[in-house]
Image 1 (cartoon, rainbow, N blue to C red):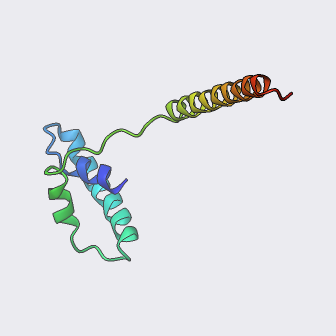
Image 2 (spheres, rainbow, N blue to C red):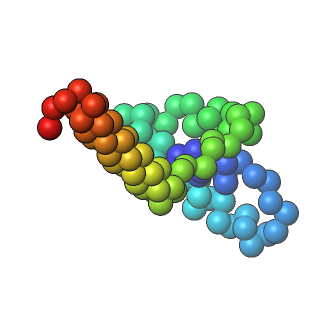
Length: 98
C-alpha cells in the first residue's frame, strides 16, 4: 500500500484539480509510512523518489488459478493411485495371489 501511495504521489500531473489532492495523498502516505516505520517519517521523500527507479511488482496470481492448479494436482494423484492399484492387482494375479 505504501508503494502504491508513493508512486501516486511521485507523479507530476498536469491537471490542476489533481494538484489539490496531492496534499491529501501525501498525508495518507505519511500516515502509512510512519505506521510501518515505528512512527518515524525520515526517509519518506527518498522512498518516493526511489519508486520510479524500481519496476512495478508483478501482479499476484488470481486465487482461481491457484485453485485450478490444486484441483489438477489432485486429479493427477487420483489417477496415479488408480494406476498403482491396477498394477498391484495385475501383479498379484500373475503371481498366483488373489
